[in-house]
Length: 255
Ligand code: G3P
Ligand code: MG
Image (cartoon, rainbow, N blue to C red; front, top):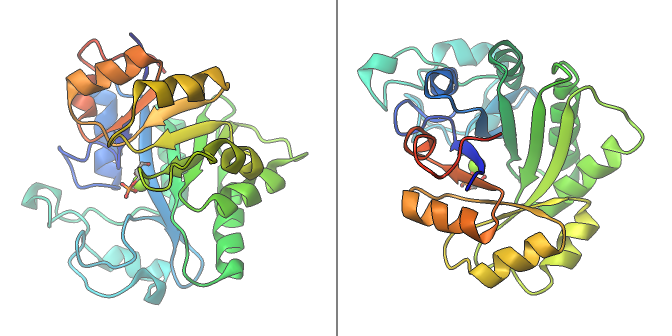
């Protein structure tokens, strides 16, 4: 069994999630794919953060919409996890691009869904695509989102616009949103990859998706036995908080 092991928010059990420290740590474990969450600050700077609020993963409270790029150097995104990571910052997407190029890593970049309306959604997609222009040609990117209209926007923007790096598109589904019309949704979104939630996912579902020609990367799987089961069923990738464990086992090493 081989499959793509994707470090969910970086090596998020070993380092603070969505920080450069969590991504740098991948190299020493031989993990090649990361997952991260991207959103925009109030000034339009693309940054990596899961929550719209700062409280859980930084020493600040409030919302990222109230921040600008110059605020980032004053915010500690590491101490909440451990004093050893004091001084870690909320990374910008530009910093991630530099790191992907330098360490030859690949990324599943999850577009968080803005609450600011269509203009905000377009701004997020277009900002991310522009940033990806700086990627080296041999880097691989999956753009994913629960908001499938953002993926549709990305598909439209990518059409006829040659990019250096490989950019593929994925639709994220929760157990509840994975309905029988999933294929219509994903095809209309212009995506080629399904990212289903692990909870309750069946062999028949994985096999149907694979038979229909879609890659299937399942989130978030932290049990090695379950990861192996999913890969045996034909899943192409596993998004996990414990990439350091799964990469060592039979769950797979391949990119
Ligand atoms: O990409 C899979 C996973 O990251 C989706 O959920 O909430 O961890 O961003 P969440
Ligand atoms: Mg995510």
